Image 1 (tube, helix red, strand yellow):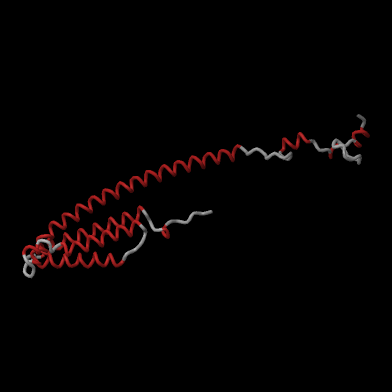
Image 2 (cartoon, helix red, strand yellow):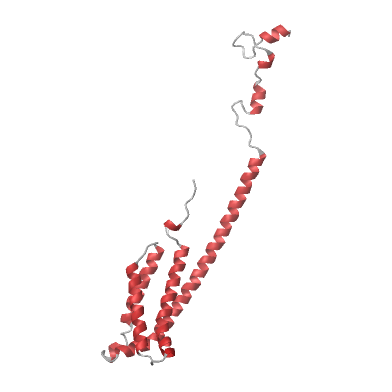
Length: 203
């Protein structure tokens, strides 16, 4: 094909206008460069970045799973210790509370009188635990726990000899149960934090 024919040749066949060779369109080259309706291939560096991000996400998920399991085990151990301390404190405080009620209460009822102290304490404690699981605050339940813990301390100390050691021994069991209970509530709060304490995710 002569030069004049090449200059007048239109590959599309739709026009006979002047078309220099350097302005001609090569469909095969366009398809290779990504302009023929096909998306360009993703560079290898971008694929490597995605693979590294996927591996990092998987390792972060595994680490979070181990941390959550360890947190649950520690919380369970703390719950067992709190239950043991509460039972021990109740057994130690039972006799002083019974003796405090003996002068004005019949002997048959005096044996059950300590339940009037630890009954409301136990009910308020269960209410606090339930509220902690549901991410809520119950100030009135804490007030009940503090009130009856203070009553138990005062009544136990009133039956003890007037020496610093005896007073400390008599007043320690209710305080020990109270502080241990507060710590188990804190453990539940850490496992199941309130929604406003969680960090916001970026979109």
